[in-house]
Image 1: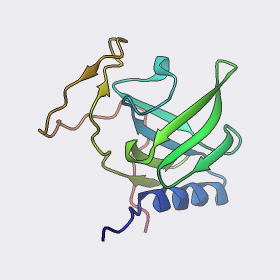
Image 2 (image 1 turned 90 degrees about the vertical axis):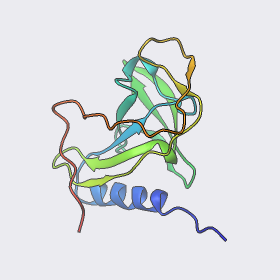
Image 3 (image 1 turned 135 degrees about the vertical axis):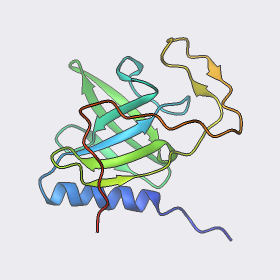
Image 4 (image 1 turned 45 degrees about the vertical axis):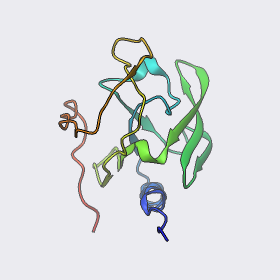
Amino acid sequence: MDLPSTKPYLIRAIHQWCTDNNFTPYLAVAVDARTRVPKEHVRDGQIVLNVGYEATGRLELGNDQITFQARFGGVARDLLIPIGNVSAIYARENGGGMAFEPESATGAVNVEEGTGAATDQGDEPQPPTTPPAGRPKLQRVK
């Protein structure tokens, strides 16, 4: 019998820790065909989202997915993030949080070219990407 993943519980715990300490929780998400986010805000196959209660509506941090409503350019959008696509949750103010290895999915979307066409990822591991400058450095929570 396989045990359920601890990842959704850890995400909820770090989110609560951020909220309790008046920090702004941010999610780093690997975007693929299963992820419903505004594609125009995706950079290098990733998006970083403010998931604080002030920035979201109907936030649900479930065991399989995270859903909420957020405004982009004044327009409300419904977002859906599979738990497997979350690569980190951290506090904007100090970078404290936790990073995860995103689970690979078949049918990744090529968002750079805006085609929406699936790309073949194969079974070979992809080289790690360097996060853009200006993002906080993640730290382990003791």
